[in-house]
Length: 104
Picture 1 (cartoon, rainbow, N blue to C red):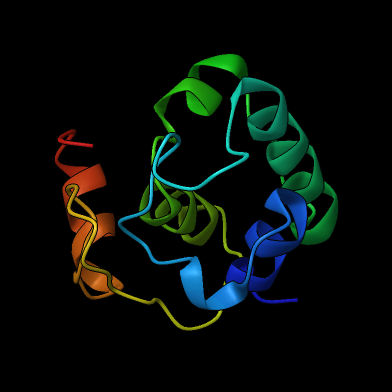
Picture 2: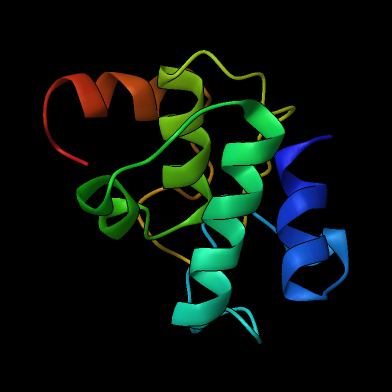
């Protein structure tokens, strides 16, 4: 299942609203409890695990996509967005490069 579909399902919103720049507070229902549910679902879906420090750094859909890709997961096609944020409109390669430089 693609990351966009998983996020939409966990948050109970339309997949079209899920863009890489989206952050908690910008999408309804994305609160701390749903964030934990989302991480648990992603761990199960992609067969990965996140420690607490990693979970707290996942502050946008793009950050989540980058972290999953770093763990070898295929997350589907990235979607840009107009909501702002550091992940908006970036290609799949850029967030990984930033993560390697410690700028995430």
